[in-house]
Image (tube, rainbow, N blue to C red):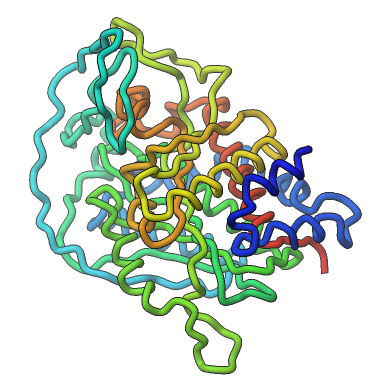
Length: 407
Ligand SMILES: [Zn+2]
C-alpha cells in the first residue's frame, strides 16, 4: 500500500526522479533498508553541535567579517565530511545598506474576524490571532554585550562568496538535485533558527551522503546561500552564473559535469519552532506543540507547480516512512526564500517549521529576526523538529537519487 501510493504520488516524475530504480535497489546488498540505515546516521547531538558551531559567528549578516568567517567555517566542515568538489560562487552585492526603521515597541495581537478574508504572503489566507513579524534593526537591542560586540560591524557593499559541494552520481552524474539553505542572518542575535537550523540540516545531510560507503545514481549539490536576507541575491547569482552551464560535459568525453542538469531545488529555512498561534494577549506558548510538523511548501502559481506538488508529496511520504517523531504537511504557498528564484526554472519546494505565509507571517515565531534568535532559546523538542526535517530530506533525496549503501 505504501509503495503503491508512492508510485502514484510520483508517477509524473518517475523517470526524472528515479523512483522505480530505487525501489529495486532498496533491498540490494545490505539485506535491509539502506535508506533507514542512512537516516539513522543523523543524530540529534550532531545536528545541535553543527548548529551551535554556526552561532559562534553571531548573526552572520552579509557583507561583514563575521559572515565571511562563517563561510570559511562551513567550507572547512564540508571538506572534513569528504564532500567532493567544494567550490565558491563569487558575485558582487553593491547595494548600500539602507537603514531600515528600528522595531517599534511591543507588537499588538490582532484577531481576524469570522468570514474575513485577509490575504498573506505567497497567496496564503491569514487565520485567527496574528502578530506583526517586525524585524529588529537595532544593534543595541541585543542585551548580551559579548554578542552585541560580535555583531557590531555593519555590512559593506562589494564582493560576496558562498559555498557549495557535490555528491557525484555513479550512473547519472549529469543530473542533480540541489539541497539548499541560507547561511546569512539578521536581527543581531545568533540567527540560530533563521537560518542556522537549515544550514546545519544541509551540512548534516551532506555529511551522511558524503560517506565513502554511500553511492547515489544521480548527483546531489549542497548549497549554502549567502545574501538571502537582502532578497535571495546569492541564490539568484548562482542561477544566473551556473544555469547556462547545465548538462555540459567538461572536458568533452571526461564524464565530468561541472553543472549537472537541475532536477529540483529543495530549500530549508527556519526548522525548529512550532509552538502554535499567538494567544489573544500576544504571548506565545514556551513549549513545542506536540502536534508540531514539518511544513513542505510548493508555490501553486509557479511554472512547475504540478511537478513541485508531486515532489512535496514524495517528501511527505518519505517522512511517513523514515522520520522518527514529527509528521510533514504539504502546502501550496511557498514564498520568501531562495527556492523562489528556482520555481519557474525547475520544480522547487521549501521545508520549514511553519507555513511562511499564514504562520510565520502571523508572528508565530517570536524569535524571528530578533536578538533572541539564539541557540539557548530552543529546547531539544525544537531541535528535534529540525532533525526530523533532516530525516525527511535525507530519506526523500536518497530515494530519488537512487542511494545504495556498502561497496
Ligand atoms: Zn530565513
